[in-house]
Length: 114
Length: 169
Image (tube, rainbow over the protein chains, first blue to last red):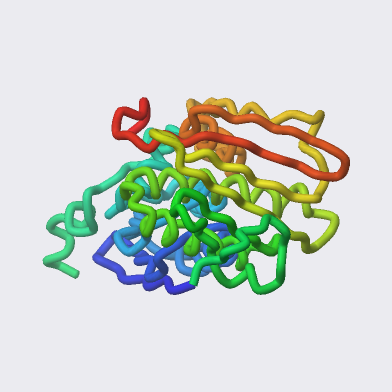
């Protein structure tokens, strides 16, 4: 699993390099997300622009990654590709997450300070 | 070269390719019951559907539904076995893809396909569900969905719309 973390001031962007988050990698994804978010900024944005496919196990792992941040921190999503967006929409999980069109929209002016 | 005999008996060499029938209307795949094999078979299935000229959106829906159905076989039907074989047959019929998935694992709980009802998401974040999305996705993306158990065999039969008039885009 290829995950990259970069901070933009008070915001951490985690970029998924894999094309799929599925049953084969869901547990590893969740564990790596725990390592990459521990002790970091309150706001975390997960960049899914490279992810073309996410199944229900992958969706569960994204929800788990959000829950393990705890009540005072947030996991937001960015760059949902059409099939990933469809899975979030059909399961209504698009109503649970703040979803940005892309990372630039999520970081906004913070990118200039990064 | 196409598989002339197009037999539906499983063979080890079938694990590496999708057999498309001579008329180009049917695909047959055999998959080992583990996560990595499911990933590979989904790639083969979608490649074969594209070669059959199925539109990208219908290929995407087929990939989501097949992923959930095959994951379910691996995680539940074959949970005790460790490994098993899954057979997949996809037939193009006018405006639907007619799909059969067979395995020799445990039956569905109570002999029925789980309902896959939408979750109550109006809950605090810590109470959000991390699973149970699979059958919801399958039910939303299929036109028909049937389960049949005979002897030691599970058979799931479903139809996927091929046209853009599908109720879910």
